Structure formats: structure tokens, C-alpha cells
Image (cartoon, rainbow, N blue to C red):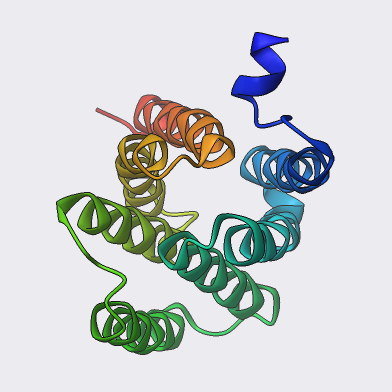
Length: 180
């Protein structure tokens, strides 16, 4: 019972929302591992988690992250040039940052950790499959591992713990493949 409570399965409403969020998490993690379907899976999982973060958690930083991930995935699916994608993600990130700061949603240093994680993952998606993309996603995930428990986002804690690990594992594997 303690494990179910820890995972967020406290009552019917939280159970339904958390089941959806864990589904989104699993979809994203499959996207990290399966290159061929990466943008589709990460984008779909991101949309599920955006709805969860907005309507259930009421965390606009995590909602912003998932929106950036969905936009980044869409740009990759339609095969937009990486430089143009980076510019679009930069503009959308600045707009979201202005909304978050201007709206009073960045109240303390912890929220800045969340924003750093958001930006790390968003730009990592733009630059993947280059090694710098996986480094950026790993660092962004690591920041969100710190941020998520502060705001009570267990799904995001678990997701980003695994997400950061998988991205750093990919960086290590890529480093081993490169000639010395």
C-alpha cells in the first residue's frame, strides 16, 4: 500500500491521472530507446504528460516542458532543418519563459532548476541524434530529478531519473564508438 501511495495512487482521481501519466512516461522511454520512432513516441508521451501536468499537477513549468517536447518532436517528424528547429525552439522557449516569469510561476530557486531542465531537454531533442543532444537531454533530466520531488511530481521524478540515465548511457556508447 505504501508503494501505491508513493506512486500517487491515493484515490480514484489521482489513480486515473497517474495511470495516464505513467503511460506517457513509458511511451517517452520507448522513444528514447527506439530511434526510428523516437519523435513520434516522445511527442505522444509529451502530450499526455502536458495534459497531466496542466490539469492534475497545475505545474506550468512541467507543462511548458511537455509543450516544448511536443513542438520539438513535431519539427523532427516533419523534418525541419536543425538550425530552423533550434530557432523555433528558442523563440518558443523565450515566450514560455516570459509567460512563466511574468505570470509569477517562477517563485524560487527550485523553479529555476525546473526551467533549466525544460531547456536542457528541449534543446537536446533539437540536436539529437548528435552526442550534444543526448548530453543536453541527460543534464536537463538530471535537473528535473531534483525539481520533481520539490513540487510533488513523482511521475516526473521517476521518468527523468530513467531518462537521464538512458541519455547518459547513449553518450557513453557514442563515445566508445568514436575513434580515439
